[in-house]
Length: 154
Image 1 (cartoon, one colour):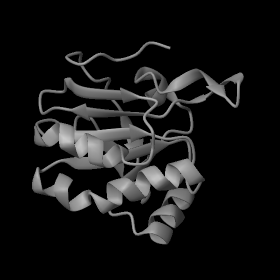
Image 2 (cartoon, one colour):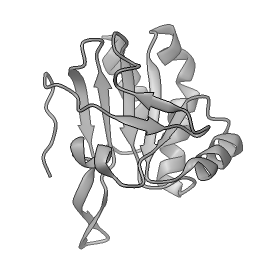
Image 3 (cartoon, one colour):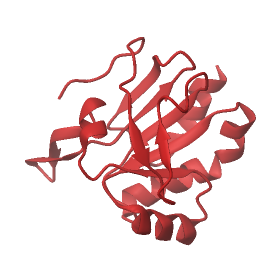
């Protein structure tokens, strides 16, 4: 798995959100955004992480930073997940995992002591010029959104 380093150009992407509308790197040019990759809607760790971003949403909004969650799940799953937990940000679908792979968010990982291939939990802050400003690979879900917000506030 190739990890993206701070200061490198973020890979381009164009993915549908929970409503089927395309969200792309081109449409976000000139803005700062958080893009976090997670394995599956409505699973324990992914729910903790998503609810953390929900709980810190106002802080990100004050800084003018958009939040994007990305998983292989499709729109109807994302829509149900958003509704169930009151998530106010876009969830993007990457069922082919091509964007995930480009960000180093898909590949071999350890799961319960075994090597498997799947989604690697990671988060990026992409700046207005399209460069990676912060990168977290394998973050602990509890408190992660707060740590991301704290890094942006500094």
